[in-house]
Structure formats: structure tokens, C-alpha cells
Image (tube, rainbow over all chains, first blue to last red; front, side):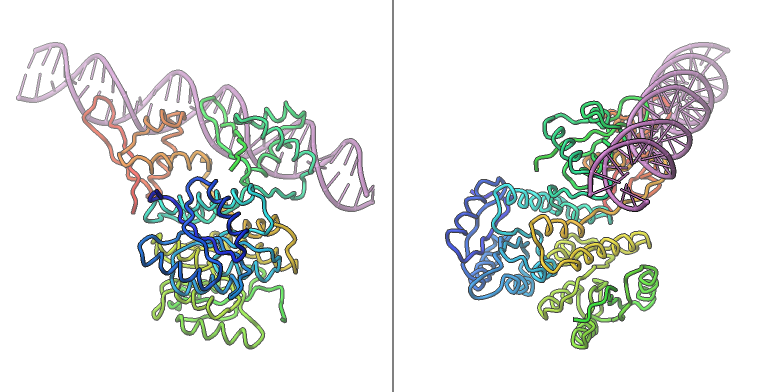
Length: 235
Length: 235
DNA sequence: GTCGTCGTGACCAATATGACCGCAAGAGTG
DNA sequence: CACTCTTGCGGTCATATTGGTCACGACGAC
């Protein structure tokens, strides 16, 4: 029985086997309910409209861009025009830049490139669930910061790139250490464990925190400036 | 396509003075060109169509949501339907959550709440410029990581500047606690709940009170100096 | 050489602590 | 009953303490 706060998902995919695979992936994700599957753009629009009329609207669409009748972007635009209140995650094998740009313009919240692993899939859905939860628990936003936070929650944590001043090996070592410890780790502990300086340790920890890969929380209670603790977060 | 590296911006705003102010702000931002101003939704759509036809398309629209003829979200949807390739930054005084959700769905890349400072404005535009640059320098995306990075660059939180003596993390924790309790909270309770000292708790509570985010009322009846109570106020 | 990465040390910032001050309740005194 | 004193608790301030921040220099790779 789908609860009220479950996210109802429509899968739009013309290849039956792929659609089934996506549905199987979806079933492993808590908080999501598979509300249906559509093989064409027209069918998707019809199902969305019916669901909205029947009082059990679709919250999220996993939309393949390559459909037999319409392009996924066209379907997305029509969804917007019809004022159907749902979010869209684009799934495509196409790596065309114009499609990515168009997807952003069409209000796509996430973009998955086929083929993808379950881990990637789960990460995107978890990120979306966080976004959905944040917007659901308030009826009004009170400040710019609230809006920024909502937008920010759509970020995917994982892809860690290397800006200037950071080396791959060091980053790997820090990441490894964080993954090994389930307990929060302070910059000083990283310093001691890896034999690098406190400044360097902080450089990498801060970078990971900015990327969303680790959680940064201040620790109080002791005199002096509060110490930041860093925790690796799996989702 | 005669693409320049400058980002061509259309300002959509019915209040002439405000439109002028936005234009002035825009002029201070390097990399952006003020391509025109529209006072109504219809005029905006016309200018966008004309610009696309003339070979100098608009890249970005600063769209006020409150327009005399159409709602900004409607204009956005029509832009999508007309397949006009441009991004939209929403500007609004309305804090309705539905508008925020609708804005995300309509492919709005940033959301500014009026009134805003130049710093906030600049931050949003800088974020967008980064996104635009990332998508511009490649003709094809090569991996999921590339797409994630592009999406993430749209959703980076704004670095808020705090007065001296206050830390972002601590302020967030105090704010969170106040939002959670509908009952008035005393400084002592904040101390116990967060594990911070009374002095620190008071510094943040006073800051929030000065900002108008919380209400400060003295409580009598108990021996000793009257205790200040702080209540989060949701508008 | 030049660029990129890391360490060093001085300086800055955020917090806890504790002594002191101020305010109100309630007891004590006339 | 009125005035004063005691008492208790929160606000205020100065200071110690600790971690964060920044600029620059060292060192290795190309």
C-alpha cells in the first residue's frame, strides 16, 4: 500500500527489458513507488494526465530521451505546457550537449547516462528524495537561504574533481581514510593518520565537504575555536 | 550560430525603476551584455523570438514572476514550448512554495527573492556564468561526471557573509533548533540542546533577533533577572 | 626554468570560562 | 502595610585557548 509520502514514479521507456530493469532498480529504493510504465511519449502524457485527474498524481518521471514517437525533450515540454506538476529525471544514451542544455531548460532535475550502475541510479534517486522531502515539509519558504538550500539539495554528492592545488594520490588517501572510519574524523586525526600537515588535510577535507561527499559538523564543548569533524556519507 | 562569449541578457520587469536597477547591476558584471528590457510577458516572448530570428539569440532571461499580463511561470512555459533556447533566472517577491516548485519544473536555473543585494545578484550570475562556460567549452559531454558537474555548478549554495564572531555552522544549528520548536526557547535551553556555552548561544540568538528572524520576549515570574525567550516567527 | 603541491609560521576567528553586574521575587523587619 | 535586604538567576565583559586562514617558501616533476 503506497503511503502518502511515497514518491510515485512513472517509467517512460520503449524497450521492455530496460523498463523492467529500471522498475527492478526502483523497487530496491525505499520511499519510491512504481506507479506505471509507458512505452511511448503519447502514452506517457496520457498516463500522467489520467493520474493527475484520478487524484493520485505522478511525482517523478524517469524519462528515456529516445522514444519511438516523440523525443523525450518534447514530452518534457508538453508536460510543462499541460501544467502537470511532476519532476523529471532524464535517462539517455545520447551524449549530445544540446540535449543536456535542453534538459536543463526543460526543468530536468537529474540526468542519467546509459548504461549506468545501480549505485549511480540509487544516488540520483536519493538526491531527488532529499530535494522532495525538503520542499514537502514547509508550506512557505522564508528566505533566500531556504531556496538556495532546496536548489542545493539537487546536487549529486559523488563526482569529485581536482581543482588546482590538489593531487589525486592525496585525495585518494584522505577519501580512503574517511571511508574506513564510520566515526567522524577531525582534521588533526587525518594529519596524524596520514602524516600530512594540518593545512593540507584541511584543504582536502574542505574540498570534499564542498563537493558534498562528506558532512562537516562543528564540535563544541571544549574551550577554543570549535573543531570541525568530517563524516563520509554514503548517500 | 554567431555565438559570442558574452552572455546576452533580457530583463523582464514591469516596474521601470526596478528594471533600470537590474540593468545597472548587470552592467557591473563582466561577461554579461544587456540585450533588452521587456515590461510584459507578451513583449518578452516577442523580443525573444525576434532575437532568435535575427541571429543574436538571448542566452539568459531575468524574469520577474509578477507581470501585468501573464505570470512569469506561464511565460517560462511558453518559452519552452516555443523551443527558444535560453535559460531563465526567476526574480520574485513571492515566497510561495508552489512557485518555487513550479520554477524548478519550468527549468529555472536560479531563483532570486526581492529585495536582494548586489552581492546576492552577483553570486547568482557568477554561478550561472560558470555553468554556461562549462557547457560551452565542450561540444560533447563524455561522461556522467561531466553532466553531474554541469548540473552541480548550477546548484552551488551562496556563500553567505556573516558578521564577525559568528560561524555559519553554528548559526545553522541554532536556526534549525528554533524552527523545530514552536514553543519559545530560552538561551539556557539552546545551551543544553546544542552543547554550546550560554554566551555563544546568546550571541546567535541576539543576532537572529536583530535580524528580525526571531522574536525576543522577557519572561517574569521566577526569581532572578528576567529570562529572555526567543521564538521563531514564520512570517 | 616553470608549474604544481605541500609545509611553515604568523595571524585571525570562534568558543568556553569565570568573575562581576543587574534585575526581580520573596523573606524579613519596622 | 511599606520598606529593605537577601537571594537567585540571567546578562555582560575580559581573557585564555584552540583551531582555522593566509602568504610565502621549499621541493619535486616535467
